[in-house]
Image 1 (cartoon, rainbow, N blue to C red):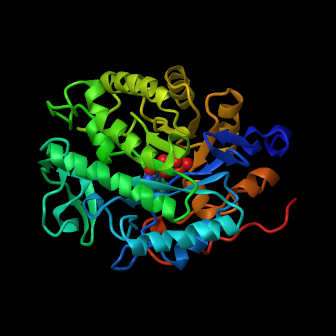
Image 2 (tube, rainbow, N blue to C red; image 1 turned 90 degrees about the vertical axis):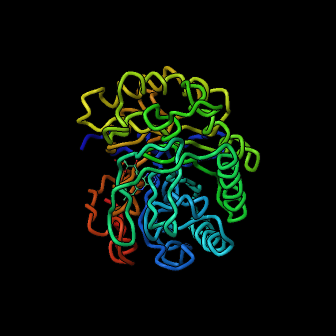
Amino acid sequence: MSDRTSAPSTQPLLQPVQLGALKLPNRVVMAPMTRSRADNEELAPTALHATYYAQRAGAGLIISEGTWVSTDAIGFINVPGIYTDAQTAGWTKVTEAVHSAGGRIISQIGHVGAVSHPDHLGGRLPAGPSAINPQEMSFTPDGPKDTVTPRALTAADIATTIDTYRQAAANALRAGFDGLEIHAQASHLVAQFLNPRLNQRTDAYGGSSEKRAQFLFDVVDAVSSVWGSDRIGVKLSPYWRREPAFTADAEMLTDYDLLLKRLSDTDLAYLHLVGPEPDTGTDDTFTAFTRYRAHYRGAVIANLGFTQASGNELLERQLAEAVSFGAPFIANPDLVDRFTHGHPLAAGNRDTYYAGDAAGYTDYPAVTGSY
Ligand SMILES: Cc1cc2nc3c(=O)[nH]c(=O)nc-3n(C[C@H](O)[C@H](O)[C@H](O)COP(=O)(O)O)c2cc1C
């Protein structure tokens, strides 16, 4: 390992940064990760969640696992929500534990729209921008199932849905979070609206790139009315690849260029931008982040497949303000210490990524002492 990588004082990842109103002591962000431990009727986080997040309080910023804004938003088992008092009380214990350990945590809120399944919705059809099957998988209590053709959201449904984001934002504020991230990536509802193959609406929410982005702008406005925009982030990417609906073709990339330009005027704390999988063949990571930088004027948290070395290099090239790490945080609760002191990283057990109890969740040890 080079001196450059291991010297704490010179590593860009270990420098403080301010993103909007969020002050981070280092630039190592914990990416949002669904871990499916809310194994209770209420879908509320428990003391186990508080322990898990507090163990990771050394991160410059923790972004919580994606949490549901309503019962209609559900698309995976044992994932906590933030739409009831019991869930909000559970999250309050989590934020208190993280703050007591010296950390900062924001809530990621989301809705899977058409990628839900009748099994999650008491037999009802899921709803999306248009009645088009996204041809994804939904993880139901009986295991993974193919998605179905959803019903199209009505204008009234859209207004109600945006209101659930506002209410979730209010609950997150009440729970003591430091900010909020809108999950607009992967195959989530916002990404469905942004996608011309899944959004064939002819009203204010579809028909052009600008109109397909209207749902996201309405959600940003709704949650900003609760928090102020300088504590709000949005996780986005054109590179989510699930054919036939999601492919990073030229139209998608151009749509996102325009979207980033327009989001530059919203004074968000940050955009959390995900690069291409290394094998997409469309772009390499640094090229993608150069393109993002050309279109977005605000702060960027960069994600996907970063290592300590590539994260430091991206920051050195000034292509982002911070870097988020997902999988590395699962088995390395003290990831920042390991980067600081050059400790090797542990590998996580994939069998317990999305299932189980404390095993594979809170039992990964921190390295004690330093070299
Ligand atoms: C177990 C697991 C669960 C995830 N759950 C979420 C989630 O709830 N919300 C989200 O936006 N991304 C989720 N992701 C994606 C991560 O936030 C991140 O984009 C991805 O892991 C790539 O970063 P990495 O290469 O550092 O792991 C998840 C990833 C993993 C590994």
